Image 1 (spheres, rainbow, N blue to C red):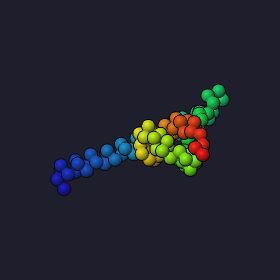
Image 2: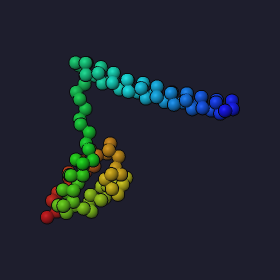
Image 3: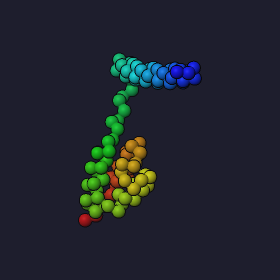
Image 4: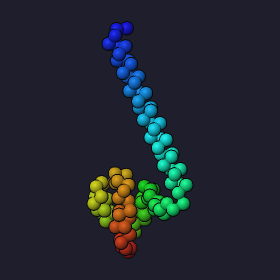
Length: 106
């Protein structure tokens, strides 16, 4: 094997090792930040649980069954997608707030 190929292989090994070290450091930082938050008795109140795709889908499906399909489609477009799976999860709360104001169409 030539010197260049050995050097290329060494560089790849170093990059792989660096990526592994970075992953380990991220994991350790996450573990220790979670532990320190658990240990702090005066920590702020836990944040509101994030809404899941399934929770939002259930509410929107119920509204759609009640005759608001067109309005639901318009809300999805407002938040940037024609499908719920394309909506940024950070917008779920606002999307549900907009959907909750829809009253029964019957």
